[in-house]
Length: 218
Image (tube, rainbow, N blue to C red; front, side, top):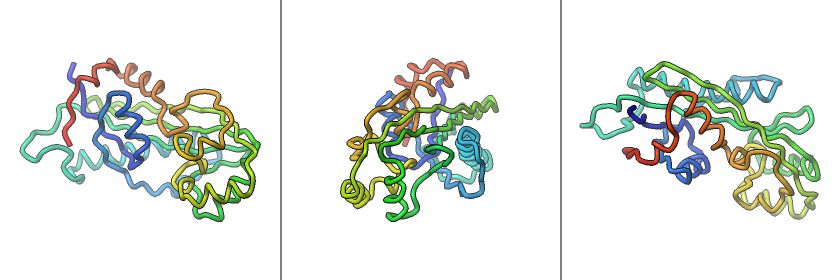
């Protein structure tokens, strides 16, 4: 079986690094989806819908030839391609949070989160272009936040890190200091569940370890 080119529909350096650490070097092609167009009160439905829309936007652009070349100009397109998109949200009680809009919102968010337990949801969409098949799934991880002080919150927000993160923290960065415990998939909190990706690749009929032997262009 031909191992497809994997396209990551995300500009997230953390997601790309997770894939590379697992032996998969993707082509990055951000979707630039306007996420404000989707308003849903259920966290699972929200992240799955956003992930699918991101993946479909790239699939449509590839089919229409409207994306910058993802491979060398003199090289024919790959026989098969997979498009992976993800979206993460944090649910705390009945509230669903994405990235904070500014420092003030980030400070208020952390004052709400400290000492609490939240659920980090990440929707995953995987499109097999050659087969015209789409898989959509969701992973959830429970996050126990430390009872941080106002001074610690201000110092953390001043670094700028939480402004770029769903849930207002990066477990693989400075924010790891302020998380007491995780229940569930660790990589899911970084933005992509490697165990779930393995399952989805297998469901499509691909052996995940075969991607280690693939050479991607770009």
